Length: 313
Ligand SMILES: Cc1cc2nc3c(=O)[nH]c(=O)nc-3n(C[C@H](O)[C@H](O)[C@H](O)COP(=O)(O)OP(=O)(O)OC[C@H]3O[C@@H](n4cnc5c(N)ncnc54)[C@H](O)[C@@H]3O)c2cc1C
Image (cartoon, rainbow, N blue to C red; front, side, top):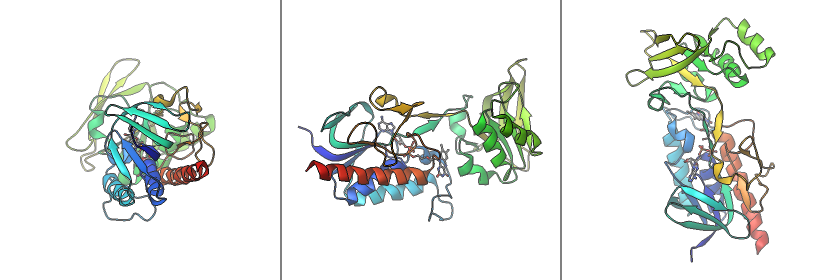
């Protein structure tokens, strides 16, 4: 018979690691299950400078996460490297089944995160964090006085493009259609911004460069014409930001947990619709998806799990 944990945290991104820290520190028997490397999305960013109190020179996502992991483990949190393939969340004992085994718990904190919808061009994976980014709040400052391209045409793409003009020398919006989808009021501001340019009817086909992003091939969707864009020689690189939506990691919970557009619905205390099941971080419906908000969610979820378990006794 498998051990029944007080808390199982699914996902070791900032939300899951913080939930683990708070649960472990509350002396709950806690297991964090992670299928890949700790840190989730933040593990793929080279630099991070907006997590409060974190002002170390050259701090990277992985170095911040390594400390979060050590802190959770210091409080006795157990770890499992496994990819969870199915969950049974109703009832007093919840069951998670992965490729390596079954895991049981009285409470579950879902912290499986979300991932930006990829731009969809060749070689994309090689340049994420080396010129390609999906988070202007996080990475705009690294492109101070450089050229930046933004892929997308909705509200997020245009608003983020305007934010990027505070840093970049020039921002070009690459959109596959000949008009934006963004609200008219947002469009008007963008058209009035002298730093913003547009490449209409265009998609990015391929990216390249030595170590960092310095060239890309774009295609005109009407004519099929291919054009190579190269970084200014003095710059050596340019930025390419993708804002064509996020994809939540919530397929596993479909049909069980209440969701909105694929994101898990919670109340302010991270409760889902199932007693003893909480959601924390980017997978839930919220307005700002950042490390600091993921960590806050994780802390709240763990403390709610603690109250739930105390009431079971
Ligand atoms: C390129 C980039 C740069 C960013 N830069 C910053 C920044 O500078 N500052 C900032 O505050 N925010 C930044 N963000 C946003 C930040 O990374 C996210 O808000 C944060 O990571 C969300 O944390 P999370 O724990 O909710 O989810 P995630 O980080 O997405 O972690 C979820 C974890 O769950 C695991 N998982 C999912 N499904 C399963 C399963 N079935 N079984 C086991 N494990 C599973 C995943 O492997 C992953 O490790 C950035 C995001 C990106 C993409």
